[in-house]
Every structure is written in C-alpha cells, then in structure tokens.
Image 1 (cartoon, helix red, strand yellow):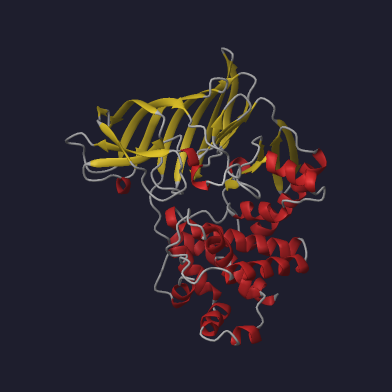
Image 2: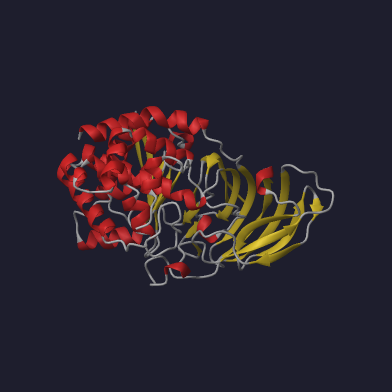
Length: 448
C-alpha cells in the first residue's frame, strides 16, 4: 500500500495550497427568521439575502424556491420588485422546485444587492427516497407531527447554485417541547411565549439544514480529539457507542492526512432523522453535521445485528474536507469522499475489506455502458450517475491496488494509468482547480 500512503501524503500537503489558490465565488449571505408549525405542516419565512455581483443578471435575478410556497414580499435594495415563475434552474435533484425570476427595479446600481423576502406555505408531500421507484419525484424534506427535515433538496430557502458557498444566520421558532438541530453553531436557546427559540450561525457552509423532533435523545462523547453529539429517537445505545468510536477514528485519520477543516464550534452533530426510508447508506453531510435515516438503519440492524455504517460514515465525514465542487462539479466531492472512505477502511478496518471494496468498484465500473457520460458531463439525476461519480470517480484508490503488471496489460489505458501512479498530484491539482487541459483529467473524463 505504499502508493496509497504516498498519495495520501501528497493530498495532505497539496490541498491547502490548491484550495487557497482557487478562485472561489463570494458566498451568498442569508439572515432568516423561520416559524414552523409541525402539527399543521406549515412554514413561514422572512429575512434577507445578500447576493454577490456574479449571481446578478443585467436586468433579472433568478433563484429556485419550493413550488408550493407563496411569496408575500420581495424587495431589491429596499425597492419593490416584480417577479414571475418559470421552470426550475439547473439540473440538481430538486423535485418540487420552480424558478423565481425577479425583475430588477430600474436604476439599481451594478454590484452586490440585498433581497428582502417573505414567503410560506406547506411542503409538497412526496415519497421519501427509497419508498418509490421514481427517484426524481422523491423527497426526504418534510414537516409533520413526528419530525422536521429541511435542506436544499426542497429549496425551502432561495437557492441559487446547488452546492455553492453560503453563510447563514438563522432564528428558528418551534413549539416549546421540540428539539432542533441546525446548520452551524447554536448561539441562543430559550423558551418565549410557549415557543422554543434558537439562533444559529454558520459562516462557511453550502446549505441551511433544519432538523427537529419532540422525541430526540442526546448522547454526547467528549474526548480531547472529538466532541460528538448524536441525536436519535430510538437507536440502540451500543450501536451509538460503537459509531462514536468510528467517527472519532475517522476524524483523527483525516485530520492527520488532510489537515484541519471547518467544524462549527468544534462539535460534530450526527442526527438520526426519524424518517422511515430516505437517502441510503449514511445519508448526507454538511460542515460538522451528518444526517442519517433512522428507519433505514434500524431496518438494517433488524436484518443483521452486526450491521455497521462505518464506510458510509467515513464517506460523509470525508465531505468535511471535500465540499468545494458545486453544480455539476459535485462529482469532485463525491469521488474524493469515496477515496477517503477507502483509505479509512484500509487504515482502520482491514486490508481484506479494502480489497473487497475495490473489487466491487471494478466490477460496477466495468459494467457501465460504453456511452455512459463522463465525469465532466454526467448529470446528478442520470441513471449511471452514482456509479460514474462515486466508483469511477474513486480512480485514485482503485489505482492504488492495481499491480503494475495489470496496468501494463490494459493497452491504450496503460499510459494514462502510469501517469496517475507516477504523478497523482497532477490529478488532484487539476480536479480541484477544474483544469480540463491536464492529460490525466482528459483521459479520466472520457465517456464509458
């Protein structure tokens, strides 16, 4: 595994330099006040969004919002603005969204703008992921008497580019007996007029996540190298304890390999959202936050008492470092989070498990149709998207267990694979910067 160690070392040295040199768009800045009525299933939002110049068109401003929400106020730089609705912008998996096209008032100076907005309504009720074969019309986001889960997937807040950098200030109001967990650091927690009022701040993020339940139980781990808060409604304590040790080990490994990352307030929050199905494996991650389906996990434990989320958790923790690709470029996040999970399995579990993962990857990639889209063009909703973005994307880790004699037998692919083996920094640098002129990247991103 010398190649794996060499690549991991190069990653740890290269990432801070590459990311620092990258031209990143200025973040959108949200300041939102959110009132939730779970029994009624309703949401009311008011606040403002500071929008950088590069998101503003010459005469219009466009964003996505949940298609059943009604906008009651919209101002641009303090002036009333008219708007119309249009089909959703972008190709991200946002199944209940529509675009809002705002006509900029005459005389608005060219530059960053402030949009004040008020809106509300009820989320469209769609099957959870995994509960219907129609994945394009599935949605985990929901507001009901059992739970609240809100993220970018429902576009509950104005969404401009899927995965783009944002910062947020959030004030949340819920019934007094509900326990919320949100993006970022909790600044305030109080009861006022029978309502639970909390304030949250997340200066470096890609989403605004709200999770809540009246039945959450908190299990905390406090160690020198980790502070972990796990929220669930019915997860077995032995499973939570085992998972806590796994997260601690993965964080320590990645910090050694990649350096420090953004974990708001230094607390990792793992929330078992009490949905019945939902996104598979360990769910999804945001800075300092992992959201996992409690229903799917309990179902897996019932089938196999030895069930473990280790590799899935390692993938999601990897997103604390790999989270800078946005829109179609999200493949970078997924490919290198998968790479990181393979490193975690090899280092913290066993060599045999690592090789089993690689064998499965090779089998699934080999089964791709010859006309499958490349990483450069694959849409998130395409049928082959998961295999291409996750398994084909885990190119570095696949190469690390490929013997030289196997590489030499691959014909036209051999020269490409040798280049990556001999200079993995070329791959990393080009992947992070989006440089398509790199020979390795051009070869990697070919269809099929």
